[in-house]
Length: 303
Image (cartoon, rainbow, N blue to C red; front, side, top):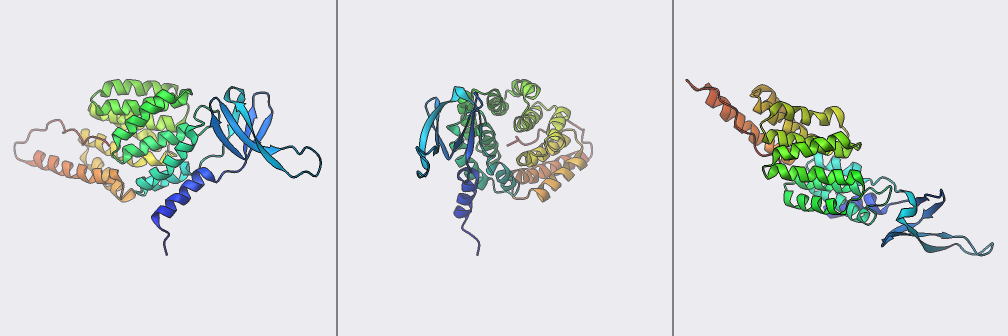
């Protein structure tokens, strides 16, 4: 018998957040605290740890100590499992389940967003991308604004900039978005930030009808960032749309059909079906006697 869906989500969240071993807190003076639990209190990280016994034979006790974030070199958080399970769910057409897991993990790490070693940026960026995949752009934009206001670490600021640029494209400021994403692609060193920037830069080029640069941007995902699996459907959709814009109909159709086969159940597969219908209409119009070949109509707005 299959487990209930809510139970599976709960177990996924448990694996992503709560199932943690002891966490090492490395201070700048090279001393180490082994934490059983952590929580945030103002500018301090409160570490729950085993205390040395007052005398031999005394039972082991735990207690709390506060360590200012300014004194911490790194907190060795284990990588949240949801960073691997959520992309798998997304490409299986289960983005809602992925969002539930990522949301819980991101909330936990929000309290440690400026702590060295935190996974807040990766989780929040994945959450924003998942919201966009689900068509919840307003929620993603609001989260990008929040991240932009809260972020102190440079890569977190760049991640917010990526999503704000995506919003700019949707508002009609595609060139401004492309320019902003250029700076992120130049400065960032993190794969998740770079991959997201490539996807949204491709979408900005689609809006500008710059089909060749759009194609180059979308192809960065399979070529340079294959580990960004959650963006693979959006990449393939963008590749198909760019080929459609270039009036390479056979390649566009093959790309959309492969997307529908490989990532069936995803929002991108649904969009690919609509694109195939547009291509059929375009081909019919061009086949009519006396039809003049005109610029291809713009592809559907990217999600």
